[in-house]
Length: 160
Image (tube, rainbow, N blue to C red):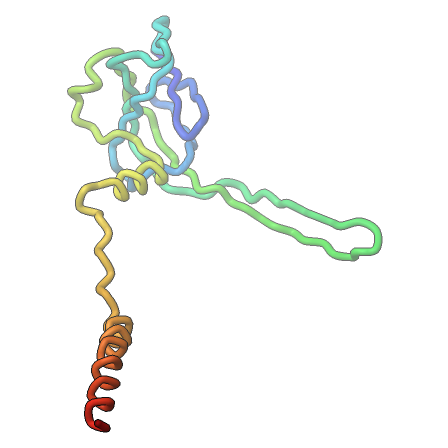
């Protein structure tokens, strides 16, 4: 049986035993993960997702893709050129099982990308930012300003 899953903004047609290179996921090698965004399983087409369906996979490794070279050359009088390279971070996974139903009760960790993991950690209730303590230097000038009228009044009283 095959399934069409969605991860990292791309869609993949998979079967049990397939090895995929997907956008980097928040998982370590040897960990079992589950893709929950399933667009199609066998002949069942989702609207937009198939409810209760999932694809379970095992993380093989975190790798980098091929290096892509971006070359920029300015024309005419500007004799400048620039070469930039990029290697995309990828996760290598092996599909172990395609589930038509019962994905909710499987207890396997959901496959999330690194961006989704950062957002979840940021929005967690325990991750509230600590308030910065008030600086003593800012409080001191206010105290000095409050003392100046008193000094002026004492000086005027002393002269009289």
